[in-house]
Image (cartoon, rainbow over all chains, first blue to last red; front, side, top):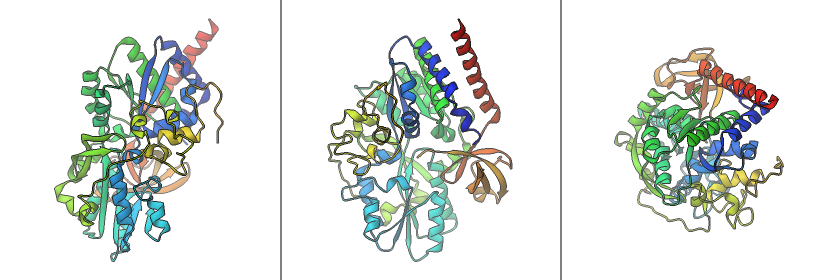
Length: 372
Length: 82
């Protein structure tokens, strides 16, 4: 496939890794923010190509992982109602709430459906006017324009039986929370290419300056990630802390203006809880007042429900790059993708699930990882 | 979750928020909303996420990145010869 295959060339990958080794004179810790990048790094063994001085930390950029327990509980409650068709992206269905997951609700007769696009959920609402159709609107900035469009069209087309359970999170406030934490180990960031496709990268400029960290907007294919790491290492070695754009074939400095305009109309910035991390101020999106009627939390009387997490899961430390997945005592024993204790084991983009799937049980293992 | 897949636009229909198109992903055709890429036209490559095109692939920038990889390769080979 064009714009994919040419970024997976093995010989080029080796040469880029050699260039990184050549540029590296000291140990550096670099965090890839996005779960899609984490998955690619572990899947293709990119971390094993790197010199031992480079440590990749896996960041909080998996929206499935950071959706708080209380929102999963709200989803379970709504999905169990007989009049509801509950629609979600597939990877939310196995995320454990306090009492089961969406699959278990489906097994007990709940009408839970996996959709590819929020517009598919809107079409279901149009076709089933006697049912309440609820879409689980999770995601980072990449997904927010799509979800905004579904709400906007529901309003414009007067589809009253559609609503959204919103769990939108934003990347820059999370990066700032990581950088200001006393136990921060991250010295440079690979920013998420598709988040920046929508938002551009101007909001990262003050972060790079304030915390003196290089931030390289990076794509998702192996050569993209290796080039992003090389650009980050070169900045670190030279003492620079700038925002650079590796993924220029998709990301423009100002981002996608029409998408941002619709997001700004439909959503407003709110405080959000992140699973395993806690509340981060102004780190999420909720519906703007004009569209409040489409808020499933209000429609089903759940706005005041709160639930704190109670688990031996250390996903908060994993999401902040403080611990690696295999350093958790429950990893691959009491916690597996089939029976996850916490969110980072659930999504294929969660760091724990990626480590489990590709059998990366020891850090910097020099043995070739068996591929499943 | 933030996966976006490049595909080429085969046909465009509708306008404004209902602007959609048929996009071919390596021969597999799917409908995508094109409201966020109003200037996209037939033949353009777009990145599609959750049924929405979020950018037009900049072919000049893509070629530049590939040229960079090629140069790194040449430098590596020069390094190996010395």
